[in-house]
Image 1 (cartoon, rainbow, N blue to C red):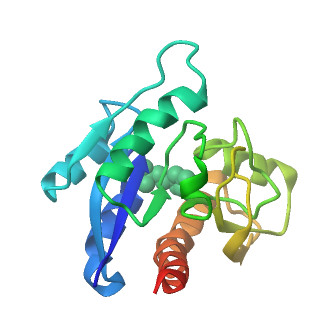
Image 2 (cartoon, protein in one colour):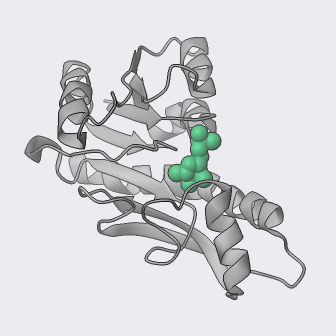
Image 3 (spheres, rainbow, N blue to C red):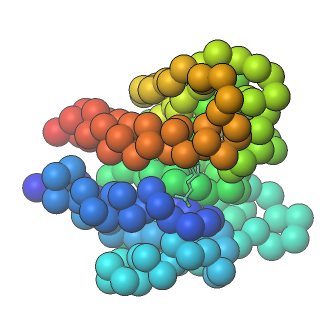
Length: 192
Ligand code: GRF
């Protein structure tokens, strides 16, 4: 039987689209998309694939425990087995019944270039400025810190001379698009 996945987004939803495209191969049903923004392009992708959506932004100084409660109520109602953060930019507070069932992808080799403020092009700019020889992506279980928790898998590339941050970003995303479905497959075998 297919496993049920909830995907949490804030932006363009390229990973969401990748999951939609590979859902048959992964034996998954995407039962819910949660967005922290009503403007996220990802919502159009979700609606185009007839996936129920829930928009829940952070209200003012609201703490993560508070908005996360609403989000996990919806996730429980949708009966999701696994929650995939895919460009979700808010800190999430994970309740005990979802420990080890929330995963994230980050476009660097954790523990480098991650944590608060390291998102999108900022990550690749920092990598480029630091002059490191390799970068890549990490899929990891989430705890209640940004980009933190046990690593499921990493993929890396060598940074050839002359690569600018945009080029690095493009190359890392090519890794991500392989790495995230691979990690989902790996995690889901634990539920079988
Ligand atoms: C990717 O760089 C991913 O590593 C990060 O968010 C970006 C993808 O966002 N967590 P999206 O799927 O294009 O919205």
